[in-house]
Amino acid sequence: MATNFIHDNFLLENKFAEELFHNYSKNQPIIDYHNHLSPKLIADNHTFANLTEVWIKGDHYKWRAMRTLGINEYFITGNASDKDKFLQWGKTVPYTLRNPLYHWTHLELARYFDIYELLDENSAEKIYDEATAKLNSPEYSTQNLLRKVNAELVCTTEDPTDNLEHHKKLASGDFEIKVSTAWRPDKVILIENESYNDYLDALAQVSEMEINTYRDLMEALNKRLNFFHENGCRLSDHGLDQIYFEDFTENEIANIFQTRRAGKAISTEDALKFQTAILIFLAEKYHELGWVQQFHLGALRNNNARMHRILGPDTGWDSIGDFSQAEKLSKFLNRLDSNDTLTKTIIYNLNPADNEVFATMIGNFNDGSVKGKVQLGSGWWFLDQKDGMTKQLNALSNMGLLSCFIGMLTDSRSFLSFPRHEYFRRLLCNILGDEMQRGEIPQDLELVGKMVSDISYHNAKEYFNF
Image (tube, rainbow, N blue to C red; front, side, top):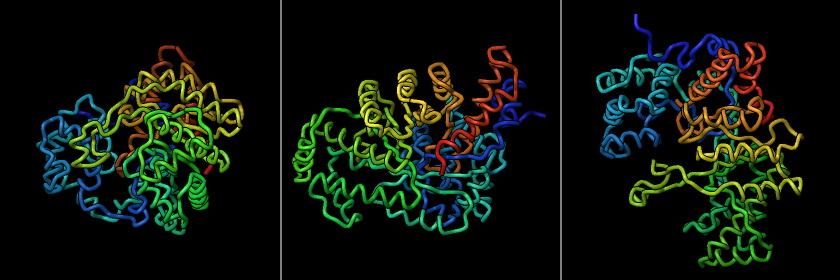
């Protein structure tokens, strides 16, 4: 009898790896401390109509693969029926061999739907019908999907203007999995954006005040930070190409803001000064509140101007950027550290060429006050796959302490993405198991197993302290 592609020892290449995974990692709860799930769908305990709705819509990883194969946009983001869109995805899957999508696709079918058949053009309709029939039952509601993967905490991502109504509903209900939020204020930082003043108007409205000066802006942000904190927020998150750091004076920032608020253009140099000032202001507030700050660095977004005009952002037109990272990041962290206002910090790198740069940078600011205070975040976006995660783990191991690492997260909009935690855990156990077999680390399952369980769960549990 042939073994299923996804089986108990998938990606585990020896007995040490198998024991590490099955005995120390597999059953650990999941702390998914950064994702883009809809809190409304969780609060409403939404049930999905079909497999496309939960699995294809909004997933630009799949969209990029389909476009590369020559699938017409009509079957991707267009008006084709959900079933026809899925059939086109099924047609695409065999062509994703060696792309992480092939692994993720079959892990997700197995873990959520007990479907072990390979997805292709011939099996697509059967798999669509079988999975959709299951999704139509209450057992597959959003809350039950989170229960299926043993989630303990999920942390969504919200803009400062959000009223957090769905988080409030969840906090007052009886759903046992904690759902929190991360504050994502990038729209207030990126002062050169065309819609910047419109955004400030929205921020002013929810803050119940006018924003005419930089002092007004800081007051409004303070109000919203306190509101988020009162509603359980303990993390911030920034998705920036790089950290900004330029010397500035308070008068300069006030004048730059006044100019932009009046609808006038500002220079690139002035924009960088403003972005530095507001980022430092926010980081100091995070320290004051005791939050963890996260920085996702290195994405070059919206490269295809034509398709961005048609479909908007987050639709699959982004890539890895080759920004200069070290000097500005060092100055930013040093400014905070010098004033004793550097809070716990996670820095995610998108360019694999910079792994060692970031891995050595975090060591400059781990001052002994907190275990793993400054973290090299897990491989994300284009790097949350076997090769990318392996390189991140190796860089962290060589330049720092892997044993203090807080592990994986989904960074996803999909309720079916949580097997990425399993994928990461299997890779981690296989790397360590391989080194045990070769005698590079002791063949001591208790010693290595503790490291595995800490990285899988306990380090994050201690670090975030929700």
